Length: 136
Image (cartoon, rainbow, N blue to C red; front, side, top):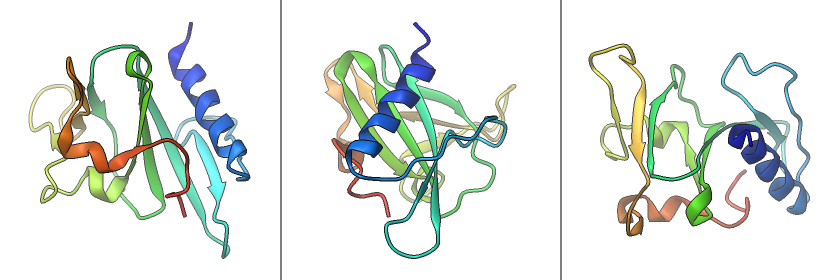
C-alpha cells in the first residue's frame, strides 16, 4: 500500500465530509498536495500531507517559504491520529515544535516528533484534529 497517496485520499475525504471544496494539483512539485478555498473571502489554503505507518518522527520536511495559508497535515496510521500545523508554527523557533537540520544532506529541512511509544506527545496536542473546522 502506498501510504502517502492513501493518506492524501483520507484527508481529501475528511475535507469533503466537512463540506469543503477540494482541488488536487496534477503535479506535486511545489510541496502542495491539496488546495482548499476559504469558506469566506477569495483566499485559499495549501496543504502538504505527510504520513507514517508507525513511529512518530517526521524528518526532512521541506518548508522553504512558510506562510499563513500553507499547512501541514501529519497522520500516523497505527495510532489513527492527525495533526494540522501551520507552516508558520512549524518553522517558528520560539515554539520549539520542530528542529531545523544544520548539517548533513537535509540541511535547512525540519524534523518534528509528534508521537512516541506511549502515543502523541503533549507539546503538540493542541494541533491534533478530528475534522478540518480549524482550517480557514
